[in-house]
Image 1 (cartoon, helix red, strand yellow):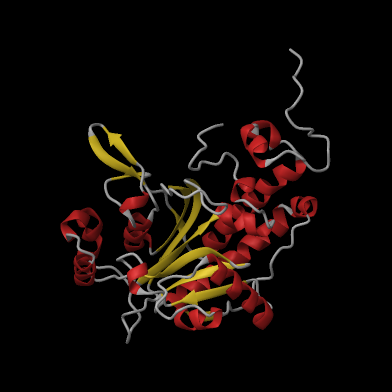
Image 2: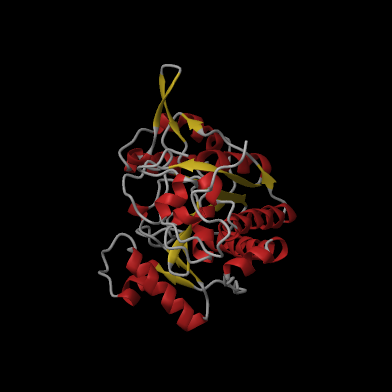
Length: 335
């Protein structure tokens, strides 16, 4: 049978259709060279990610996406019926990648994560690809940040090596990853952007201001904010020594947008039990997770990077859905 006319004019250099049309007809619109190039950047980034970590002695692992308990926030999970029992789609591989540090010492995972985010924004998806890394025998979160810097540089190298034609088609400006990523403490970041000192988190406009500051001060597309408040981080986050209001954690901002969250984890069982009780929960609910710490774990930490958010910033997409093959959000369950 002859093929029917495509819903968009694939022969044009640029597609004039609106985003809903592009998403509704994604199996066809992804055929356009400039649209396809966006995922070619993603695929090349993944090659660079894996090659960098493989060369550094990491082991690729895969963890369950159906889990018994909530990893970070009970408000943002998809509950499912698991043979008559309640289970959840995994918000992250956090618990498993930590446990596997006790086996392999250095691990990474590439896989989907699920967030039941009720807000409809240009930067959030209900399902996205998470690049997760965890490593043992660290001194603190700065060791984690150093590995993250190497990984991001490897992803850029992957794009240069495997997707230079896609970069050209898109006119994308690849970032130069500095030898050392600039770091600012959360308290100093609040002062810099003129926010109240009791703000528990950075708002999007604060992130944009910090991105502009890093660009002007360090000529860097990247800046790390460390020391987020203990109340805004998951219970497994290691407090800042000497002042436990803050944490040994960080966010990496890329071109004014949070790209990565990472840091040092707790590694002693007693500290976990205390941290869980401080959140008003019972450690018994986390028994399968905590058994790894009962048998000894090294000081460790890690990070998670959202693939689609990375590509969106690379091509300066106005909406993360532009670079997602088949996005899932508050309204979209097809195609």
